[in-house]
Length: 369
Image (cartoon, rainbow, N blue to C red):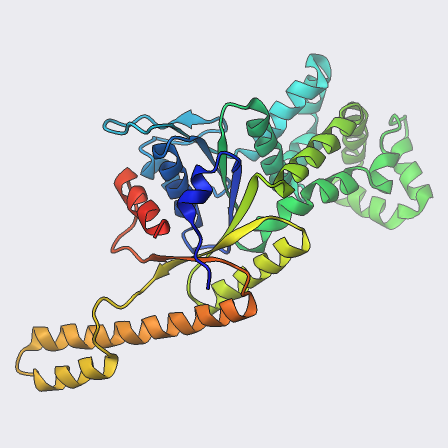
C-alpha cells in the first residue's frame, strides 16, 4: 500500500488544482479547507472553492459568511507564509456574471430579465456543475492564486461537472430548443414549428401546464443567448482540459464504511475512465488502536477488575475499539486489493467537530501523516 505524500503534493509548484470528491457526510468540505490552510501556511497563494452549501467552512475559517467571490482569511494570530482565500459557489450569481461579461450590456439585460433564463439558471439539469467549471476556469484565468482547491457536491453528482459542458450544451443546442431560436410570430409560430417537427404531444403538454408564453420566452432567450453560445462551450472545453492536465490532482475522500468505500470505488473507476489524474484516497475518520492490547486481552482483564467499574468500562471500551479498527482495516484492505494503484492516507476521527483554524490545522497535520 502506497501512502499519499500530502506535503509533496501541496508544495509542488506544478500542482495548480486539487479536487476533493466523495460521497456525502465523509468530511470532504473540512478536508478541502484543511488542505488549503496547510498549503497557505507552507507558502502557497491558495483559494478554496466549496460547492457544498454548508456554512461550516466559513465558520471554521473565521469568516461570517462565504460569497461568490474569494475572500481572504485574515484572523488574529493567523500569519501564513502564503495567503488563504475562500469562497462558496453561488450558481445563479455565477451564471448572471457570465452573461454580463460575455453578452454585452443591452443583450445581458434582455437575458437576465427573461423568465426562461430565470428558470434554467437555477434549475436546469447540469447548471450547477457547469457553473462550478465556469468559476474554476475564472479563478484559474486570473493567475492570482497558484493553488486552487475545489470541494465538490456530495454523492455521485460530484463528478457530474465532468459531463456538464456536454450535457448542458446538448440540451441548449438540441433540436427542440434550436427550433425556438427563430422569432416567435403572432399565433404562436414557434409552437406550430415545434408541433410540425414532431413534438405535438410535448408542446401540448407544455402549453397546458404553463402556457404558450414559455415557448415565446424560450425563443427570445435562445436568440439572445445564441451569440455567446460558442464562447460558452469553448470555456467549458478549456476547463475540462485543465482538469485533465498534469497540474491537477483528484483526491477521493471516504469514510472507512462499506457504502462510502463503494462510492469511492465508483469515483476511482470513473476518474480512470476519464483519464483524470488521481492522487489517492483519503480515508477519513478512522479509529486506530491506541494501545498494544488485543480485544481478547482487554475483555479478560475487564472480567478480573469487576470490582473497579471505571477500569472495567475502559477495558471494554478498548475491546470495542479494537474490533472497530479491525473492521475498518478489513474494509480498506479490500479496497486496496481492488485498486492497488491508489495511494492512501488515513485521518483519525476527532473528538469533536472542527470549528476553527486550530481544528483545521490539526487535520492538516494528520493528513500529512
